Length: 305
Image 1 (cartoon, rainbow, N blue to C red):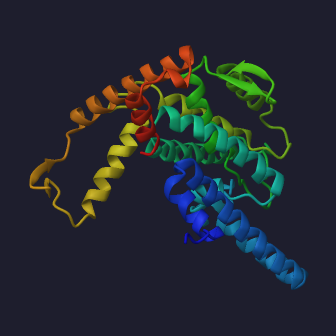
Image 2: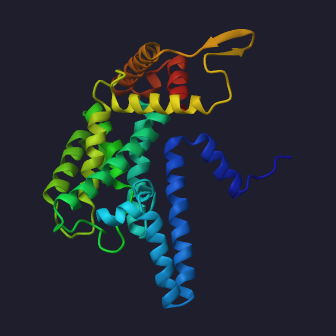
Image 3: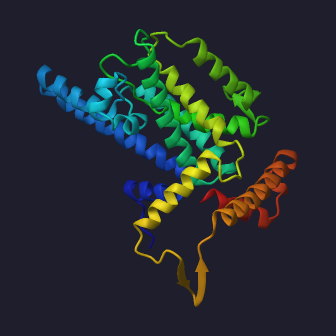
């Protein structure tokens, strides 16, 4: 008799098999719930405790845009793009992340999605910080007491990479009107640019920092000089330094497997991406059902990486 899966079992399954988009959604949701639960306890315990809890949460999760405050709270450049203090802010960013991330995973692998998200968030934070240093008079987004929070800059990196890599993809606006994704991206970029300096509760400089990473991420995409490829190779080398396994060779099934050189890796990535592009072109022309079983299996395997 098959036992029913619990909610925790479902969460574990989604984390293991749902892809990087689901993992990023889970990470953002976990941080949001932690913030909300602690905030509730703070309010219930009185105004003084509420203020203390709020200050601690902002100290941990917000990006301080004053340089003197940033120096004492540098971790905010990494934590702010996983944190949301308002439900609507959280909901809109997660919807945007879900659809952008799922489309991204159809074109690229999961590790590239993660790196694009992280670099987009970091670049967005640096843009906000530099903007406030260079132009101290500006008031951008949530930057008075709370600092900057939210995943929108990181998600903009993912969305922009999609739009500039595959500009002719059609998305349904409001679920009804087909619009080329590059048109939407350009509208978003223009709106952020003309809103710079407005005290409208939005960190527009962070968005534009994410846009920059998105554009750079698809330049010379198969080259070792590509910003995402460089970051991935650096991260892989860093992991090898702390790995207990042999760095040059490992034994597998009686055969000796050798680590690829950067040139071999880039060639393999280029060939894999070219095959993905051919399959996606076939889908756009003839539909998913026109694919052979081998092509479907290959696309499925790439989406799991």
